[in-house]
Image (tube, rainbow, N blue to C red; front, side):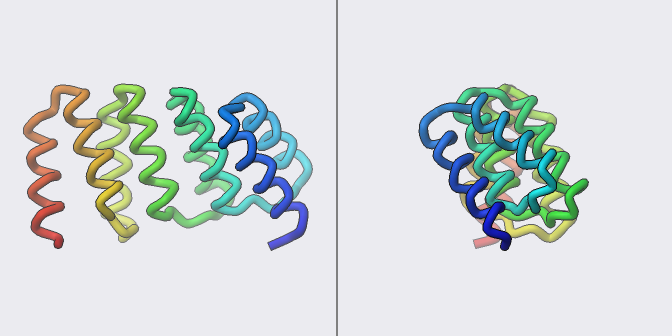
Length: 140
């Protein structure tokens, strides 16, 4: 990992922890324009900043950029985006992401299932919530 990547990650993480989502997005944009190598930490911290601010559409935009930057899906990033969708009442997006995780063989952990089940609950999809609960309990 390049030194500039580590510095950018640290500053974006600080913005996220300080609830400064706009500053995190601005720094992300500068990092992207500066040709600094982006890594999962860069995306995770920026997505988390959006999550805390309830900016689920921004988080989904960032998430879609992970593929463009040749980054593999990981459990942390996907779970964070599902959680953002849950908070934004974007149930269908959460379910699509959960399905893509399973298809891509990304590890599905308790956080992933909890966020997906909560998204189903908030979206009035109680049958899907029960279905995911059953899958979670069966996978133990």
